[in-house]
Image 1 (cartoon, rainbow, N blue to C red):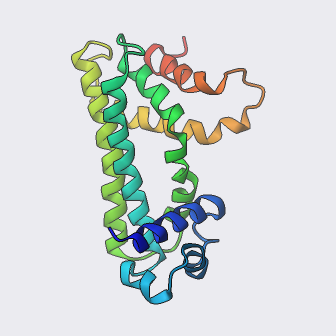
Image 2 (image 1 turned 180 degrees about the vertical axis):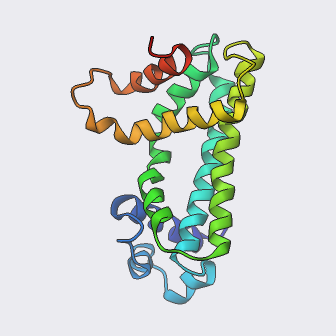
Length: 192
């Protein structure tokens, strides 16, 4: 990848993070990356394609980082879901696109190409969580009779979405680093 393309991606990633998708213009990306309009459009057809490229790159990096985390972690050998909880808490920076992505998903983009790419990226995350559940089922950490796709969906929703909304619960006394662990406790044991 060329240095110029890397600068465009870095500038766009920072702008999308701070301003959101709709409030970031291609001109701002050009200025922040010290690029030209021609160079930007040489690498990316439009803002949507650039955003999706970043989403895919970040998803792949997040999954690679997870592989490293699981290889290097002895944190809780009794339950992989607690290792996952720690990883998600530590990697919140990589997940900052969740709100921006939700904004992007709800925008009026009509491209079949973009829609298909978004589905592929979503499937990367979904498959990851399903595989985590299957691994837990093999290890008898999760009921093997339950549908791993359904449990994977619930786990993904629980960990990703609850992190977005925890700032609404200022009176809940769960420290930042324990928030995901508490979610895993509830996922595994229920609320009884």
